[in-house]
Length: 52
Image (cartoon, rainbow, N blue to C red; front, side, top):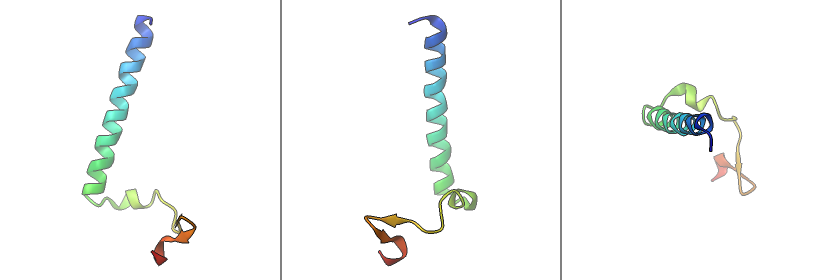
C-alpha cells in the first residue's frame, strides 16, 4: 500500500470515529435536529412503529 493510500485510509477511519462520537453525543443530548433526519412514518417487521 502506498503512503498516500495509507494516509487516506487513516483519515477515513478517523472521520468515521468522529461521526460515531458526534452521533452519540447528539442522541444523548436529545438533539432535535437529529430526529428530523428520520421519516415521520417507519415500519419495523411490517408493523408501523406507532403500533409497537
